[in-house]
Length: 295
Image 1 (cartoon, rainbow, N blue to C red):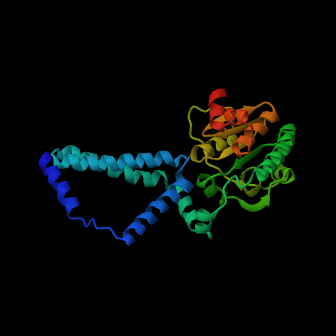
Image 2: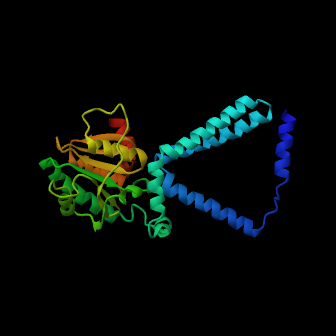
Image 3: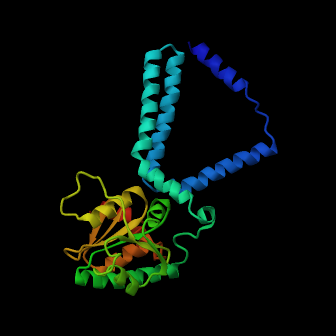
């Protein structure tokens, strides 16, 4: 049986034309570059990264099923192949909302330009400093008046697809604008605000709620939306509780409550990539480490 498998592999690869030309090299380079750009913009540091690993597992399972069939373990082979096909089809149903949003993102104007040439989330430290300053000023008032708020600091694709659902603003971040949007009498106060760089992209955005069954009942819709958003993207979500005025930041599905604005400012600066001294860079390398150590 092993000789039969080896013979089949030898026949398959031997029938291929392995002669490479410069055109083939360019084609391979284009394919690799496209996959890398797609991974960097849409998959890296998001919940989708786990999905990709699952898909790779399905591919290896399908290859293994073919091997089982070749060695005459046909019942096991066809069973495994059918199971892989069933799971692959079910993924289309399970992730139908995400696929719909993804296709909508692909069809929006300027998709290629924004994907290939969009500026980085941390364009300059000056911009990030302004965002932190304006955000902290707004949070001071929001906590004092117990005004609910949900602010998403956008990074990659995972949060970009949700920003299209809300009301487009494309406005420079300012404390006055943040307070106006989250004022209880405005139409946009119930949704989330998405910030990218030094601009408010959109407001009134509806985010996915977490489905974690272990989450405490004390968390309301805003906190569940913040956790849900952080589970499907690498965004950082700032939440102000309407009931207590407490401030929290959620990242990677972990929620951290802040008792003072100074610590909040320091962590926001870490998230936005502002230059700090070496001690603070080690201590606040990323919010995920902070949350894991202190929650």
